Length: 221
Image 1 (tube, rainbow, N blue to C red):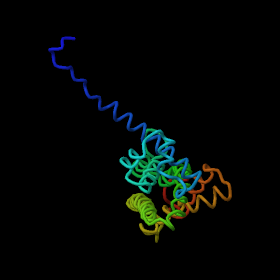
Image 2 (image 1 turned 60 degrees about the vertical axis):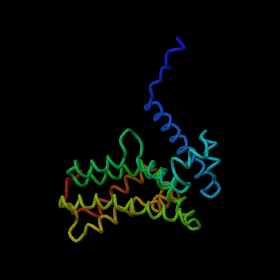
Image 3 (image 1 turned 90 degrees about the horizontal axis):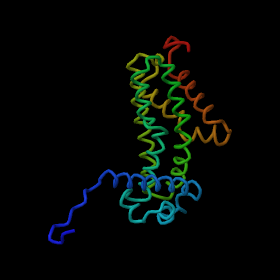
Image 4 (image 1 turned 90 degrees about the vertical axis):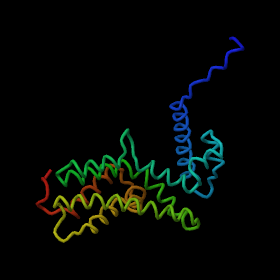
């Protein structure tokens, strides 16, 4: 190389850097979920989960902000479910594209079977730890309000389609949708009574239909 020539600048590879950052974030989430559920929230230090994920403590704080905010990120990751498209988007599609309300609500039950085994254990952990941690108490309330906001949208869609049983308000439908997939119900039926997640999801879908729809609404399928 001619020393008189200026050095050649390497092209910045932003895509590769983002990919590495995404992989590191995934490792942190996986390590945090495993350690929180194994050891509990208070007993799991950021240093321990950073070491497990192979990243620095500083990088965990830089990406997530705090230990409690990391739990919120875990919640959002769990709610997304499996696959390339999040469960929330699939639920929205059911609300907008599925005209048969029975199939729609049973479809919600299928999503409950997929997502709740990931979400409920984490929420139960947060509920317990929030009793002595003020920041985590705020995270718990945010989890509850986000779930309620999601079910409110689906309840409005049922009402707009004329599917709700006479006398059932949008607010009541929202609360019913919110209740049946609550972590406390999952704890009773799956953890304590040892129902399979599939059986639980089927039951939730049928319970939605029975509680919310008029007898003449939709098909008999």
